[in-house]
Image (tube, rainbow, N blue to C red; front, top):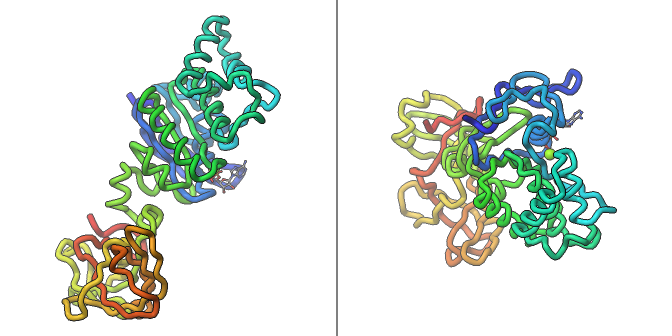
Length: 357
Ligand SMILES: Nc1ncnc2c1ncn2[C@@H]1O[C@H](COP(=O)(O)OP(=O)(O)O)[C@@H](O)[C@H]1O
Ligand SMILES: [Mg+2]
């Protein structure tokens, strides 16, 4: 039985539809991340699962029970918000107690849950402090603690790291991953940050403009993007995209040409407008004399320690190559490059959908 199921779930605000029929199955214990740019409907979807927003259409189930009309407190979910939403005048302990109030537990049980949670999160020393007396990372931990004391079946996180500085973000991200390993609770987690998604998720749900673009493991969305949107959204630096045409079993782009790799035979038609996708790491420096070598002008070089990024111009195309640092060259120089044919992706330019399957 799935922990959470969305069937054609829709959200409208008045006449404006912002979530367009989302289908999603989340298994018990799974860590699922909703990933996408700002405004694509992640928070709205999460809030519908929490019961903080009505569902305008479709069916939402938690633990096998349809919950479209079930109150938030009866859904067995607990939400951790972006801004923590702690009560400033209450101590850490009181903040946690407050979260337990609707459950009407006896005092011994309340104390036990708070102490257990404080032990897991390392909050023991902080129980009598108020939020102003805590660092950002500690506040985030209290916000998680307040969700945890209710021993929910499902944790919902909305961009929980966005108010932390870069170093702390990495640390708390690691803590959230550890916590999930330890508790095994189902998690639905919203972020616009691909690194958070790739490092934490069992399953990534990539959203765009209120639609689900692709669902897959981090490896699937990286290695087999179904659309140009996913291809360019996942991976840093972004996948290079080159507009081309299929001409006589070759891919002809303005300024260069390459044979159509065998695996695309029968998947494209003569004259079709296609987009070649190639990750920066799949562009290699080669000798001028090697087959398929293309001349490239180096415009910018970024040294990153182990590797370097080269901003290249090949005819009218701007490409980024990631090369071993000792292969970097000064801007202004001319080099020769080749695309790793085995690693290129091909998309239909008009629909943006993959031709790689
Ligand atoms: N209460 C609301 N009334 C009208 N439009 C809203 C409301 N809340 C969100 N929206 C719109 O819905 C879309 C999705 O918003 P949201 O779910 O917050 O996106 P995300 O979390 O992915 O950044 C946005 O266009 C946003 O402006
Ligand atoms: Mg949001």
